[in-house]
Length: 93
Image 1: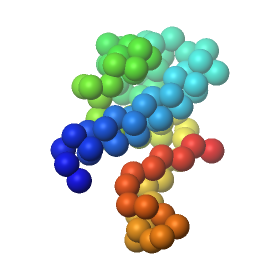
Image 2: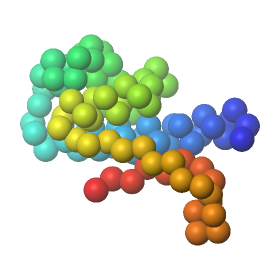
Image 3: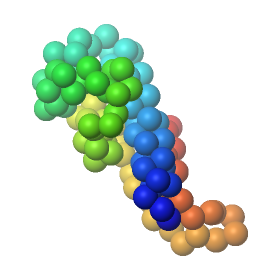
Image 4: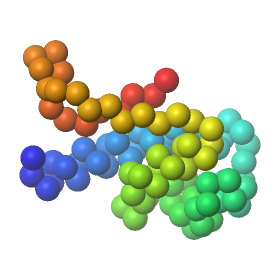
């Protein structure tokens, strides 16, 4: 996988996680300051996620933030087969 392809996959995974993060924040009616306190992120980082400016936010940081918001985040690795193509997929429930 080329670096460009890996960056695209990482960005799309970050976008999915950021979307869930923002849905939870909206649903709970939390301010950015409250979210920062709950997730141990700085308020400017929370603001970046809220605006989907994810270039300086790691995938791991987004996963940790979701865990701080009482979500279970799972990473599943399985062999690529004919029913599953190789790649990165993020599922939300």
